[in-house]
Image 1 (cartoon, rainbow, N blue to C red):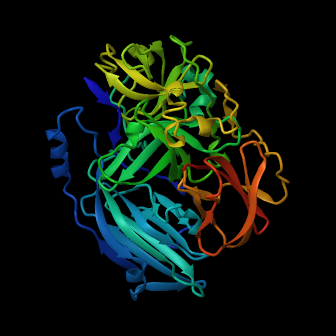
Image 2: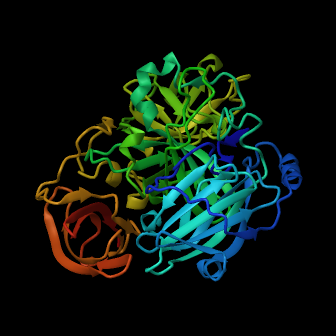
Length: 540
């Protein structure tokens, strides 16, 4: 029986402070509180629905998504507002009776300079924020990871001499399964593997793979109907420029309801071999789809924020060589949403039945894969990614490893159908070196400066988002600041193609580059002595 390895759940967190990338500060925990209650959830109803589903026919859900409507205008019309140290403070108690957790998705999120938003649970064990104008996603939305319990508090404050800002809460995700369990204070797990043969990456088996372990992430994709869990890996490119690309599986985003967004968990792993703890406080929210293709089941995204150095990220290397029975390496993944594990195959070979895939056979004493492992990387003996997990055929479990797994090959995804949106080549080889392999890159490495860049000013690509990408030449910008800017368009070898100036008069602005032919380019934009840089593709 074919089983697609995805696990439906949502963004769990416990005992975390400032879990999503945040911008300093702490809640005031005021007592003037507005009460907001959403429709209750009946866990037994949804648990029975899960029981009635045919095993293996659908993902395992952890929560449901409800449409709601709560605007900033409603909040600021309440008399229950505080004024503290020159700031207006609104505190809301958001309740979903019967829920085991809540998470919130905003369809609009425009905050003024100096405004801050926080979320915390009733016991104040989980606190996330501050979220500011810099937290907005490129498409103008914002979403949070989960807050445990049926009650969550949202605190919003802004300078009394500025506008209040505009935001719209559109969805609340309500949990109906207890992700935390009775030992909430001790474990704080997102999920649990079904099998008991999995090997913690903190064990000695992982000693030769410490760098590669740091590249593997857990991915949560939120939809209007719920959320799904997969694995993936931060992956390097030939420019060695630390572009935060994550490689995962096509089927991890091929979902039956519209997408809301993704959250990426880094370093979710045990602190020591056999330990029952794992930090959940290293996340990045939001991404842009760069390329995907169902034929080899790959999905490449670019995170909307640079991975903080505090996460100690590693950008894994890759190989697109086509080799039958390559030197054995390992798979690193999050089975069942559990803390990070490492598995060692006893055979990897080109699939005789699926020409774009590797077939991988396991022996359970060295670990296997489960639901939740989808999209996880397969490393060869040279510690390079050669594929990402698609599916299992037959029985693959700790009790019976007689089946096998299939991984879409990097080589099969390299050129796709020639469209930049369906292949890895323009993204993982932006310098067009035609390299067959690319080494990994540690976060401590110094990123190179392209030819022609003066190096003056504070260089950053964290605040410049370009979308849609690829585009037809009308390139939209999202920047953390406004004003008059000069820009330079270069090719991927550093040659200047076009120069000009523009006025960034709103948070979202567009530049017309439709005169350029189809291809890949680098946009450098200087605003207030800050140099921003990002790569984009024009496709006509």
